[in-house]
Length: 326
Ligand code: AQP
Image (cartoon, rainbow, N blue to C red; front, side, top):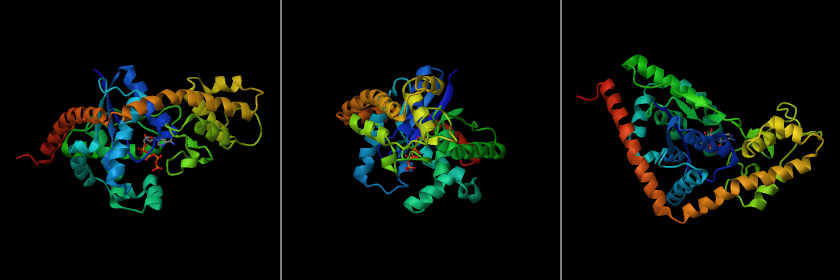
């Protein structure tokens, strides 16, 4: 039997190399391993915590659907769907929120960080509970995410345990699955994670080749000129090496020996070339998908139907356990 796996991405703007190397690329690799029952979700309810217009929201959902398909998510192998079309996500959130102590949410670093930027709304505060519902509805044993989501995932584990203790075994406690690049850092500031709220420090998946090359050329590097992997002493270079290894299908060790005695300039130029080469086919495929939005809608509709079946059955069980089914 295959292992159930779920993960999602918010439709809140263009995807960057951090989202790709921490999450999306891994989704595709895991899907293609054939060992997992994969469910990938566009978490559009999460996106409501940022105040996006109707037009932007619709556009962002379609763009993200195109990104998933362009990266290699195959709706024949994975259930690929839209969160808002599966009501059990919102319903289970309410149930789980009654089990969530305020203190658990108060300490979430992403809330503190995003509240500073977007203003604190209640949705942003309870965001991790909705994320727990996204995961627990599908009996997911593993959740591929970037490192920034570990705290949220821990809450999902806690809530599964609490519910099971109180109402009988219902949910699986999910485990995270990290990539070799679980926290891609901002190209202009290696102390901050790459994040779309600081676009200058991001390489976006649909950046034109010259833009990608320029961004890599302008990336900050550390003092000294040796190409060695030293996350403490040379954090900016360590970040570039991790990105290079991931997109170049190689290892940091091999890169160190290949660039021994070579300067930062050559290293960055070649990293730029490798990134451009890796991203270009995806960018072209995305353009093609975006020319056929009806197809994107059909794919999501079909996936949402499949997800509704699984999540609906799970929530029916939850209702029964809670004494809500008479
Ligand atoms: N820098 C990163 N390195 C590795 N993984 C990352 N992820 C995000 N940033 C990095 C992972 O991408 C997946 C989708 O994340 P999300 O939907 O939560 O996107 P986000 O947090 O809105 O993305 P940003 O760019 O980080 O947004 P802002 O600017 O709003 O903070 C997740 O698995 C996440 O771990």
